[in-house]
Image 1: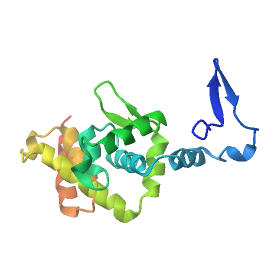
Image 2 (image 1 turned 60 degrees about the horizontal axis):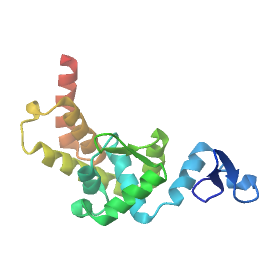
Image 3 (image 1 turned 180 degrees about the horizontal axis):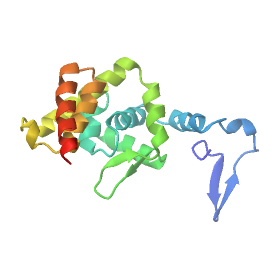
Length: 178
């Protein structure tokens, strides 16, 4: 309701800016989230979808790598404008270290639901490539468990059976040693 300026904060109170119409309020929480996303610019929606595929908290390099079109976004004004809009609309939040995460766990499901299976697979493939490059060819045994689990998740999302098995088995073996 805030995005379409139906509600505004005036002197410590919320006020309607138009005559109240119950039709303005979505019927469900998911409907409300879909409505919030409908007010985003196309670039902001692409970055939000990348955040959903990445899961958890991501830095700008990961968001850029997974945003449709790949790493050309990093440091680009379009990326900064999209992040600003997502922060303004409370779709994402920024942590103290500069990482970005979706502001509400239900946004993850709504954003992923809006992706076609082919797009979701492609974005997981971009994430997998990005995180493998971060590991820089270091031995799997030297990578942190969290990094290997993340690689397994994105390999599975990308439909890469061989890498999924390799990363998942390694992560599973390590988790039993904890």
